[in-house]
Length: 108
Image (cartoon, rainbow, N blue to C red; front, side, top):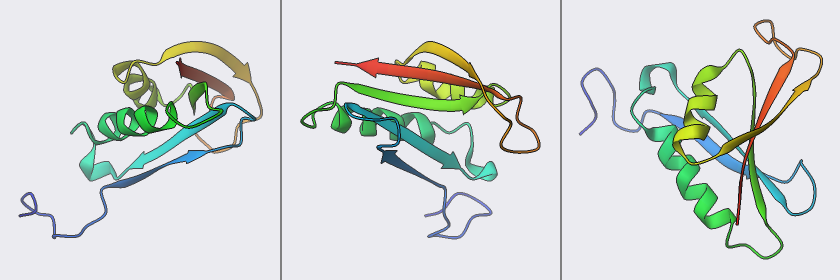
């Protein structure tokens, strides 16, 4: 049964693994519908993807990147056992971006 006010089958969010950070690294991307936040969905998805990613041949690092204006993504990374490793200045990509990209990682 869907929670009150939600239809069964409504999209809660999405997640995936990407190779855009180069050899040996898989990046996790995730998005949660604003009405579904603070329920642990993103953290659970990140934990599950990380556990699978680190068993794949040739993968020794899993990363999460987000703009510093998005502290909720940083909280998800921290709860999932990631460590912040770098902050990179770049051109803002969206109106609310700071232009500071925060990079988190987990390794074997």
